[in-house]
Length: 374
Image (cartoon, rainbow, N blue to C red; front, side, top):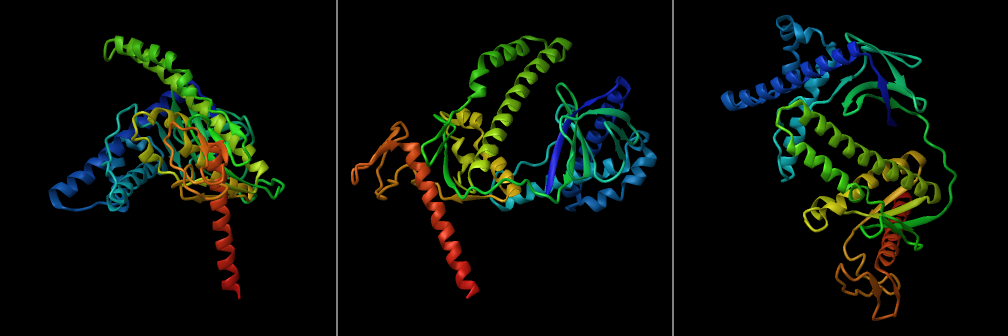
């Protein structure tokens, strides 16, 4: 299992300068690789790959002294990023999605570099980086497992390091034997099949006034001025705070669910299609359903739990007691069954339906396994 541990770095001005220079060289190398691939295809109809461009690195190093100041594996990882960008581009084309050709990166859109295997050394809280220098790591928790890669990232308030580690031991959480259906929403962040509700913190909505003030300050400054850059940093800090508040909330709530239930059922939502509704897009993005489901699945896998994804169609329309389909608009918040008379909140009804559909999946899977064994 691979996990990531992220920590703040304490860097000197000299190390900060070297990190910035290294990041800029990697960005230029990235842009040059994208340019070469585009020109090769447009002029000669040739598609370049990572191996072809990586073989050119020794010649580039000999010709450009700036490239020689960057560790060899950091240079190679930069070209691997280009390869991943083009792989994703072609994959989206095959799926019929919006292609999104790889773009050139300016100095504000390329903010990390990676040591894939070597070039770094960690001794206590001292991190030594080849051709850059040493800095201190602010360990908020111990690193668990064997460190495989080290990534340095520049954020609005300083430099951070992410250790990607390989773990062979999962988190032990005692089994409870309980299962639950989870219906995510906007009115409440989530409703459980027992009727419990997780309130929606709405971090973006709460910070909108501050964000508008900070954004107005940026727009009033002259483009290219130092004051505009300072105002942009203040705005970025506001967004970073919202992001961290949201992530903290999602981690805490998902861990609590993992501790209480062995099997968790959720809807297989098309969130990308849902945010096309301009009336609900901001609220859906603020709730971060997709991120919540990813975190929940990751924690469940680590703890030996299971997350069941069930079809989302008609979970709010069907009655959880008798199965009758009761049509209702999104504005109707109560479920009233005309067949059996069941009355409860529509999200509670949907959560019970989600749990029921997951039980059907589990029953069918168990039956297939039994038939295969016999």
